Image (cartoon, rainbow over all chains, first blue to last red; front, side):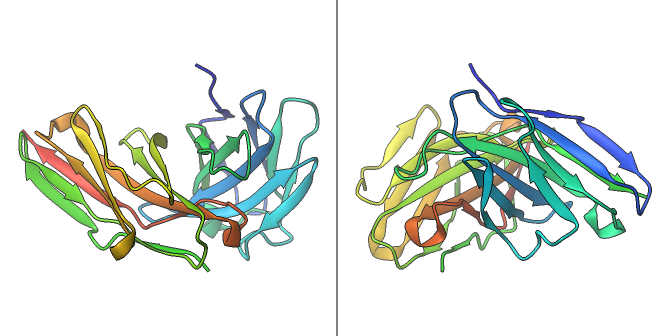
Length: 115
Length: 115
């Protein structure tokens, strides 16, 4: 069964460092998302991406964040200068369609720890 | 604006008990989609079910059942004869055109099933 894969599963970084979280969405999906879940809290939307550009972003997704689809398969989230409060689980998701309410399939997450 | 409320933060039951997880949603759209996801201790988000606003038929899948009631804007999830492996955080989510079909999650309900 096709699945969304994320790497690494766990990343530890020093405050101020740049990190890149990687995702490989399901191959025939067209819409990609990043969500964040601070430990024990709700799953929060960060950004959606379609047709090689950001389609929606939340207020959390400030200038420190960027997304990219550098090739036909990878979808990355970059945090330029990490802060302690960026420590969270980051989930990538993809859907085949937008309308029609197709369910979003999530990766297993990357746990980011900023020290 | 769309909103999902899961009022139960944590539920604790003994194995074989039935348990119902509540989900109340808000949206102004007439077309919308509701989802349940399971987050086991390993952290990934596992899709369980999708429901669209035009289909109020309840669904049963093994020990899982879902009760969708538009009149009360609720989409409740019942686990029959709970098992220890059901222990997880369960999230209800909503997507609609007013929210650009981006899934909005509730805060989750942590279910603990004791042997």
